[in-house]
Amino acid sequence: MTTLVMAAHGARSAEWDTVLAGLAARVRRLRPGVTAELAFLELSDPPLERVLTEVTGPVVVVPLLLAGGYHVHIDLPEVIARVRPDAVVAGPLGPHPLLTSVLTRRLATAGLRSGDAVILGAAGSSDPAALAAVRAAARLLSVRLSRPVTAAFASCGEPGIAHALDMVRRGPAPRTVVASYLLAPGLFHTRLVESGADVVSAPLGVDDDLAELVWHRYDTAIHGAIQGAIQGSSRSSRTIAAAASGREGSESAPVKIS
Image (cartoon, rainbow, N blue to C red):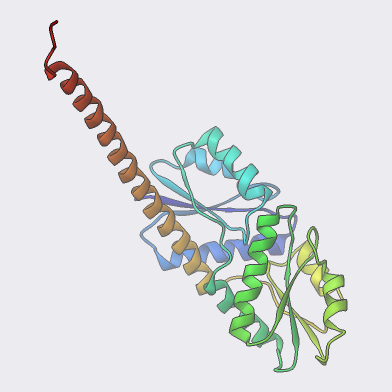
């Protein structure tokens, strides 16, 4: 059986660690027959490098990250290449309709009203592709809520949360609500809470849909690896056959003697 390793970022927050541990427990509960380990790229324990070293047999690493960026494209591949080059790595969690479902429930719990303006508040990244992924998540939420949703960022990326709030407040909406596009409480969620928005929803946290999404990424990664192996084998077979055909043709071709 292929082991699932959930690779989260890590944080200097006991509450953050508790939420991630709760999410990992929810993931395990959905498929009790599969070994599922939680590991961290930095700050929290256990470190990903140690967990990957200790896992035996096939392994799929699912980043518990909502978008690509430095950690997905640099940190994670470096660890994989160093200690488990055989590991299959899945894509980040977002964007995905299951995340949209969680966000919608968090907003409902926070008291979202029909006339409220909505901002999707994310951590941010210097990677344009990661910012684009968050904007895609905002579009999914916009469709679900049947209203515009603006993507904004608590750290790196434009618009910043303060700028987004200023823009949205120029409109007719009586309140501005920020949907926290974060896994757990921590520095970036605190920035959203302190932004001055009328309402800020809770982070995604521990949720069955989020746990199901982890398994979806796991399954997709395994399927992709199998298809890649089949295609690679097919290409190798064609190459060998072509080479053999070339040799046979050369040897069996009639020789013209002049």
